Length: 389
Ligand SMILES: *Cc1c(COP(=O)(O)O)cnc(C)c1O
Image 1 (cartoon, protein in one colour):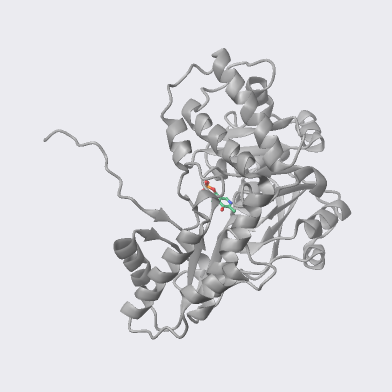
Image 2 (cartoon, helix red, strand yellow):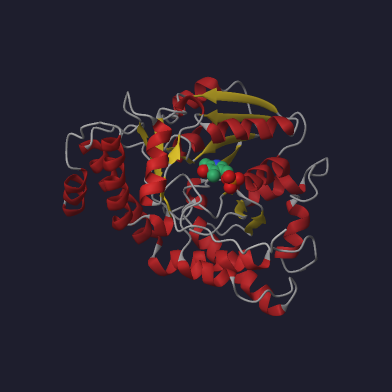
């Protein structure tokens, strides 16, 4: 066998549903010297991560820190800590991640009621209410459904959670870092996120936050949390004042998250949210000029992720291959009922730029032309007009 070569990943522009392009200074932070997980210098970094995370989540919740694992580990953390066998959970299912939440809740032994909405739509309070029967322990819903590009109004979910006596659990994987989050003001009891979407960090950590009500529910359990690794009552002893060893923290990933959160705060949460809105609006204008239609109605559309219908007669995978090979641009395909008929374009975190909007639109135009389509309007002119307007 010849000597193994170092890896050499090609340069890409990641405009899919995540991971998104990692900010250069985050990559730099990852390469700094590894410290011991109880080194006082590292404990100080942890404290700063917690403080910044609270600010970006919009909360003063004591129980706020990143879990070791990707977004799905954060999802599992919320359910395993809040649920005991026989507990009742109401889940809004309008995409892949609502479906996954229902699956995780069932694996905890909970009695799960799924309320379904068509993929690409969101829930009104009436829709959630109509699916509920009696009282619940937890109402779980996705804030930013990355599989469909839909943005859930959380006030509707909060209203119904209160009516059915439930704690409100929210998937914030794609909203954290792309929107101004207000967990406390919105009355969210448990939230989880991920690092590789609008925080522009590599995948590997999952920020979570539990309200005082959620923490009390954890403290009053009759049975131990079924997962040792994800048990917040153990892990909070490491992130809290005890600093007791639980598992070795992923030190360098936490350096990366520290830098990513710092970038959010230096830019300003509102400025960053506005940037996501502006670039997504220009992208949609350009797509529409090419005759491509968004999957989600205006007003319910996510800014970090735009889902668009693949026109009849165009081959989904061929277009994505063309973009990757000719432009170095990655966009996502559809999942579930949207497989083969939807593209998902992410403009997340540091990847939400006018340059990327322009690159993506011109790449898509050439890809469509390469398939023999005549593109009706000029996407770049339409995007430019959106920026000017
Ligand atoms: C990406 C994503 C997840 C899952 O995160 P992983 O990091 O892939 O485990 C969960 N929910 C939403 C809304 C997501 O976009």
